[in-house]
Image 1 (cartoon, rainbow, N blue to C red):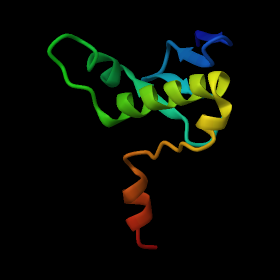
Image 2: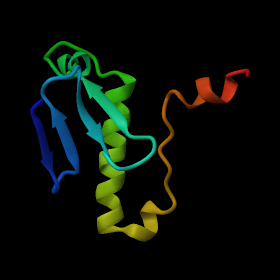
Image 3: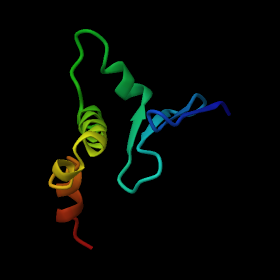
Image 4: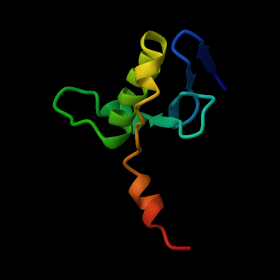
Length: 89
């Protein structure tokens, strides 16, 4: 297995699995980026919920460094939140 960890961006790249990126890697609610998600970055493709959530979480984590008081007032909900909320046990 080939794993690359970059502390500056808090990313893990696992080259042997379909899941290629976990962000942030040490938190509950991390976003898993797959090769299929990566293909959505090609010209003419559309972003999916996973890529949008990744971008928002990346932005929010950068904001935590620059303006922590503002970042504390923001929460990014996953698009899968409603599914979990509506799930009947």
